Length: 402
Image 1 (tube, rainbow, N blue to C red):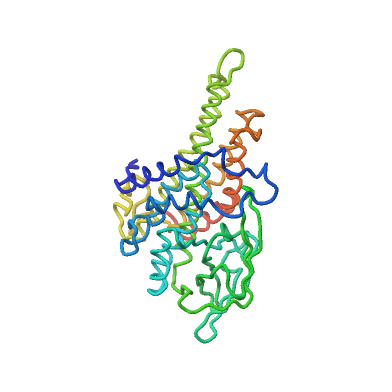
Image 2 (cartoon, helix red, strand yellow):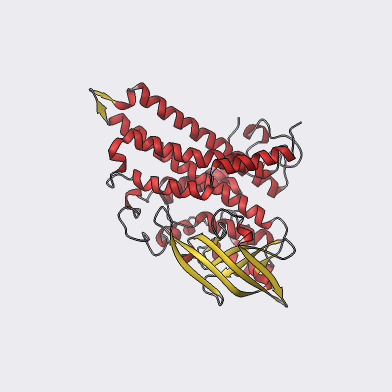
């Protein structure tokens, strides 16, 4: 397998390392020590540093001040951000900006993209529907009334909604199409309630009551929501991978210095075997993540052999052969596999870490309890592995392997 990244992607990792190197997980607000939300807003100082390092414009075209990179580069940076529990809407804002760039009108692009890349405008996405267990696009209806669109419905658990300037909302039309509406946070006909995630961060319950939007603020293009959803999901898998890797590193360091019977507990076979199992989980999470990110990138670039990210088709997956971006299954199949490993893998890694840390892992003096809370939020965001396995089964039935 060939997981070689391009020089540009590696440069993005180095830049993110410099930015996130100054973030101390011990300083991240703890939900166990805070009543209600841990903070009113995301980390604006860190957001400014990301903007100064050009990490908010990675996927934007040079015309908007961006680097023109792909989903693989974004996932590499997200992986680093999760290791320090970075409290910023990097995934949501980047994914929304890319969607506007690829599918939005020229006026909206000119208004938002350059400013989004500089961190002056913050975007987020309503991706959880009314309950978190239904397709997000079914939670809101959209209908045209002359030259405006009218939106009605509820989206729950909108990440970073209270700090965002605009929320990209999927909605369904009467004829079964899905549109994406760019709704300002403060807009007539919108009500933003407060919810709190397991990590203690503020989420938003967005209620739309005959909210009227100009046509230029609604993306009515086939495939836009599907692409945005796949990028959000794959980015969440990258966050799960980075968090899991950091937790296993913490566990290795702790068991290497913690002694029982005069020996480090890391030398005990039972401890080593459990850590090895979690290492295998992380490597599977990594392989499936890059496969999904590569498929997204190559589909966007229209290439088949070497993807836009520079990871070869043969290197990423021996089964990734065929037309277009390779593979007998649609991109959704690779995303489903990545979700299966990420949702279960991050849970297993944190559970094992708690077990091997003993009671110290649950102590609020240890940063592990913060990682546990964030891991649970990521697991819930990804959804149960069984649901993804069922979706994968449906895809395999519809696209039998030859």
